[in-house]
Image (cartoon, rainbow, N blue to C red; front, side, top):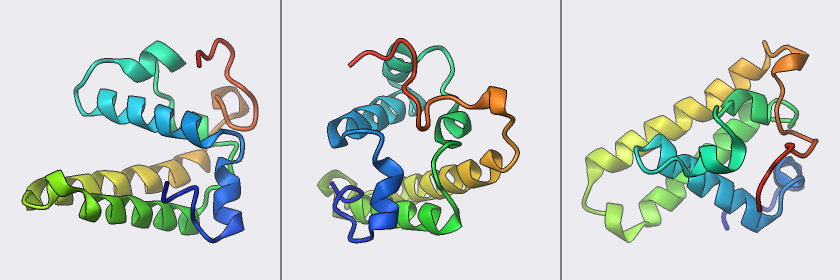
Length: 127
């Protein structure tokens, strides 16, 4: 909810090609898979996560990365099950920061044939 409730229109507009429920579902599937759970994201989106390619068509710069990371850090701090696990909280914060800024840096070097998702709908997406 934090991202979609952000007061800045420019930031919310980054997510305008997805509904809130689609974005939450995609993020949930991605995190479950990336942290060692079942391959839920692959089942929906295909063999490769293509994280940078799926974000390349969006207007994501350093400011947006910092803002998204702040929302993720606030969610981590508010999560009851993480309150007593400093190591897990810090590892998640580092992961989110690295990933957000990786997307910004990687999209600077994307070729058109590496784009996936973005402002066009993925072929074969399952809702």
